[in-house]
Amino acid sequence: MKKRQRNKILKIVARQINSGDFTKLKPVHFRCIRNTFSDFVDKKYITEWRPWWYDQFDNWGNMSLGEEHRKFFDQCWQELQEWTGIDMEKYDQYVELNHKNVPKQTRKRKERKEKEQPIRKLRNPREYKIRVNEGNGPIWETIIAEPAFQYQGYVFFIAHYHNRWVVSEPITGSRITSDVRYKRAVKHAKELIEKHFERFVATIERFKQEESA
Image (cartoon, rainbow, N blue to C red; front, side, top):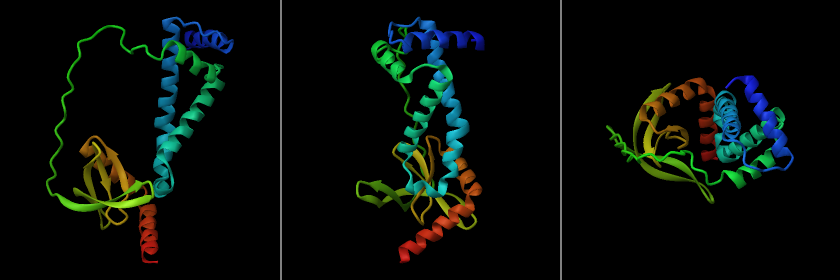
């Protein structure tokens, strides 16, 4: 859709919804604003939020991923309101009234059975310990994993945990990264460690000091 046509539709939608008129929009108009919002959020997530989150690597233990996600989406909603002129609270009310139970596919399609992907077998399984957050704080949990890679004398291991491949390090038991794909998880973990190695070492030393205190 051309930019001029999109902006015209956004003005029409803003005028209707901001007035409190929650009459169902034309399908083409609703599809336009839904795609506009989705593209806006996806772009900011990939180009702004995700790089920022990885830069906070050495402070992940003091942060909540869920809380940071909530802040990000609240900010996106505010920026969308300023850009489009659509009152986002009223837009939420409109969606609740008109599109809550509308299926994404309007045509009936034959359901396909999802094939379960076989879990890759560990070639060199060993017992490692990871730290997981519980209600009363972090605890150590024993899992079966295998060495994933080494960097500057530090060994990192990988395990299939909660349906994802998780790369961790054995000293603090902290997770480096995770992915549904084995190789992708290892590749991403290597990139993070190489990029933030000095911070990683500082975190390890601080942990050792706290444990010995």
